[in-house]
Length: 163
Image (tube, rainbow, N blue to C red; front, side, top):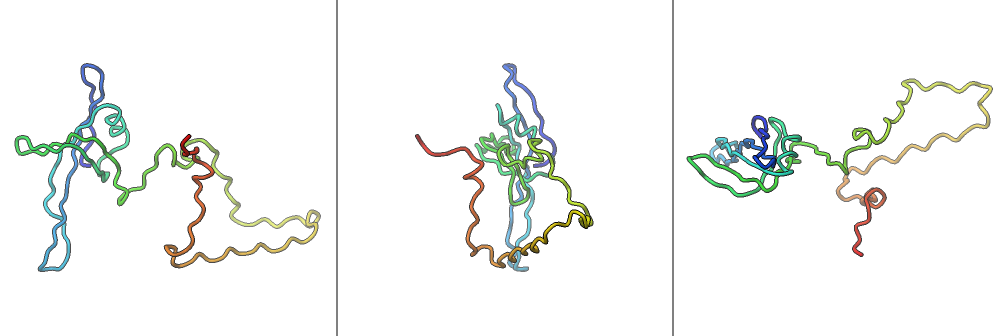
């Protein structure tokens, strides 16, 4: 996205947003044997309704987005009446309400910070000797082929079964 999102309301109170996306085509340079960026093409995008409010709240200048919709050429300018707009996850990390970490969402207190230097226990509270903690196994180097870990979705997400 290029620039800022302009949010306005229609006479009936419907939110409408307008923003510019710079579409940069990739071109293969055979002489050099590599890909290069082509000439940027500005596309003026418009959205209405709840999507307009979400776009105005979430997007800022230089955020890479993916937008779909109806493309039109008017007066040598490309316009996209967007049906869907999202953050390009190839360039950014995005959280939605359900995936936002609890600490960032304000739903849970931050975990206590461990002391920088371990404090030895007093001799009078030593008690019986505890076994030394077992070191965790080193992670597999080829994580793609390793067995998948159980998903937290089964615990945290509501049931998605049909009734």
